Image 1: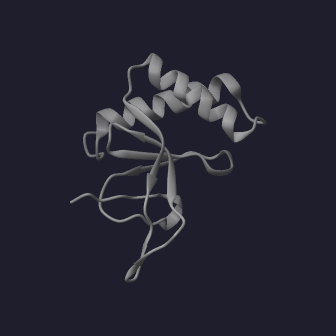
Image 2: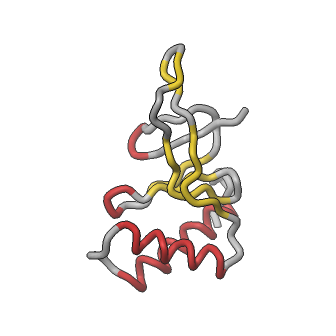
Length: 108
């Protein structure tokens, strides 16, 4: 395990769980099938998670009427998105944004 990773232990558990789902299901299913399999694995492995957590979207001086819904929030720190069959991990930081496929939130 790489100790230079942010949340190394949690990252290792999450990536291992995602690989378990990928190795068992393979490609070709709808997104919801992978999410259900991930949820099953998170429960089985006692990984704390919340599904479809709602976040307000701040734009300049307003809050937009539409919200961002994170597929999974794990360990109350990591956002896991499953868009178009690709997993994206992001760590809790401050604002929501999506550079190079990662969603990052910072509470600090």
